[in-house]
Length: 354
Image (cartoon, rainbow, N blue to C red; front, side, top):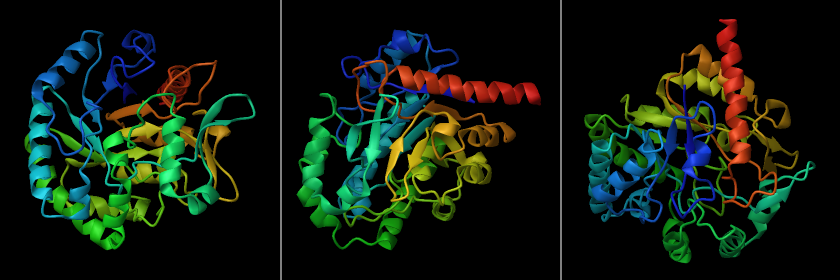
């Protein structure tokens, strides 16, 4: 298991590489060129500059999260050909830098959805919260304004300004797109990209939909075990992989995360590990990584990885906001560092019990 930590770059993150360096057992930085609009080619010189900065602090740059997929590809428009060509050029440039895994998603419009970025927990910490009734009743444009206003001045991944500026146009474009059409468009993308990525020794690792059900009338397809298997069958290639996010899939209590890990361990290139507490009405809030604090058996998830001698990449996903830290929602230093220690604690104990 290779531990990593997501970092948004100098000047775009409250956390410094020197802070991350002090977390035991963390050897990699999960990174991206966050200001690059979806569909544009990532310049090699900029990639190499980030590589130099990160490696100078003793980290690897093996995992990129994310190279966003342009909406025209998801919509299956004729213009997708140029965007797929651009995606391939980005893969070539990332391969030259030594990148091994590209995390991406195929969610229409939104990469993730929450209704509150700083919901208070009983212990006084705050965390990301999803309130079902607000998603049903609210206009998506109003939700966008709320999230953007409450993001502490940071750009939120999946809620980039260039995407949000086209929100009404995008909803109109997707109004007649069905789940099956989205599957077909995903298959087309995979058939073009996965063999190409394999040639460059890169694994493409899709992130599940967050949350794993349709929102605002938009289709969602990477939602549970059955659909994960369908996804892998679209292009049966060892470079067609999963980013298995326990928090995203775990928002649906029907998803048995340890079972999913055991079922697909050989195709999981990247793990996002976090816990969520689900309420009876379907609302959920993110918690500490500890098993007893949420509905996901994080212990058994790590055990499933250990049983399969998992050698892929792991990162702690969203943390709570604790100890008065001012940070990008979900991406502070302290609680994610605690998460790493919990994950390593489980792993190390399992090693002793072998």
